[in-house]
Length: 122
Image (cartoon, rainbow, N blue to C red):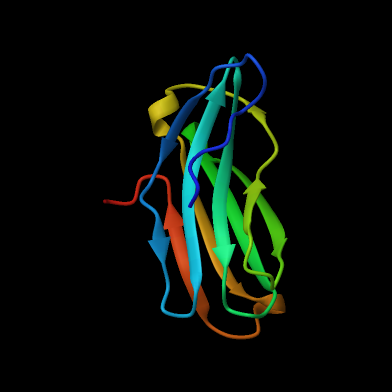
């Protein structure tokens, strides 16, 4: 991956990421929890070299069993991309937030290709 892009002009954010992972099929990803001011959200950086379109399901899990989930279409071109959940007001301990991205063939046609987490061991 080419590094973590800025969150916004003149704005600082806390970004907690798991390791960069890759699958034998050609998916690379790194998943993070981002906190800025009073907001928290999940972001995954990816590259899809499989040659076919994929779906990424990104989930942010927080204190009190709070969960936010989004599905992003991942194009077939081998270009870096990102997927983000909506921003939510941060509640409780920020260290309790985790994010997971799962990459699979479109419409569930086939096995899971890669799972990337913000708290995955390096």
